[in-house]
Image (tube, rainbow, N blue to C red; front, side, top):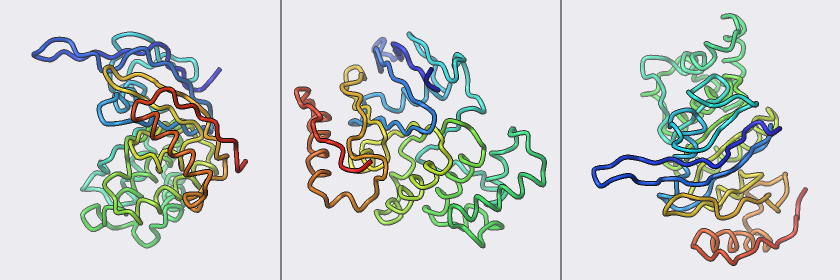
Length: 263
């Protein structure tokens, strides 16, 4: 059994113009230590699916389970990281990371040790006593990443967490996430509309379309498991990116045919 199972998910919203079907007939799975990227244009329901998995949005139809248990509300087995850092401004870097571990069962000394470890892992050494207002945007997102992963939750849900960062900081964060997730063997569900980011991070890519939000294709990343930003210059990457882009643009006849180049 997969860690995550989403079956025939549908989410409707009531508006003053009537019922809007935001997502319909979405079925997907995710295994432990697998990063699944939800990729597609704005308005295709990526965030709605993510929020439903997180227990933040009630499904109208279908079923979601994590480790065999139905999702009916947020829980400590799932941590959500949003585009905005969502740090507590009255807590320091160390305090924010520690807050994410309050339900972990660790005592204070164990949490303190884990906070120190994660501050170093996200390259924020010397920043433990700083407050969010004293940090750059990239540093705040590093704290958010550390807080999410330090929690010990088996599933991390990420909604375009790097979208507001400058290009270099975004690349650094993507590479850092890849390294940490590979070492930690967590399940990550990652939402983005950026094709480069999706291909870099995703072990599996789930391409979604609109009206209503639905899955167009769900496939393994053929570029292998040792992906890095150096792959962007390769011909194989260029071919694969074009195929994915055509799927997103609605050319559903496109077939992902490229062979694995790096395993």
